[in-house]
Image (cartoon, rainbow, N blue to C red; front, side):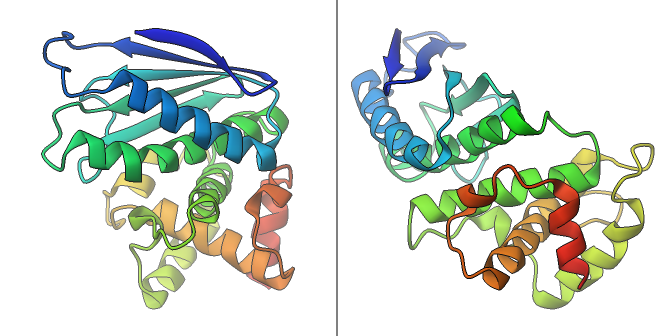
Length: 227
């Protein structure tokens, strides 16, 4: 296990084990730290986040099954990354390909929450996730994040028709349905629709770096998408 400071800001990384270390023997701590250090330093040049703790867990909980790595973030100063040390795709491959993406996604969340606290509506979450997915791809040119591209153009139009009446209705918003699938909503709809909203906003402004819009209120993106 390790704990260290990254960059010249108050960003710290901590590696923790939720499963026995002998079960996680495939996890190369030095390799993880190298990827985290390089990735976060490059990402934070754009995000300019001032303070955050990055907790990295060797655990099967919280990972995206297809990638063996996942993340969670609900606050500006704390984000969690999960790595399955025994994933069938191979942990070294996953760390090289998907760990930088997970870090970019969650660090983008953390930075946004510094200006706009974690949202509880579909509107908030579409923008939070759309920005994070877009930032993943911005930081790794050529990478296509699967959950941001899970809907066809026709499905995106239908998703927007379904989403628009309940964007700010907390009582009718079910996060799991919109982002993981359920109740007639396709898997990863929230990620794909959010990504399309951000892409549209950036295209109109001829800008390819989503970090430039990290502080823009959710309603500004959504009103622009309606036009």
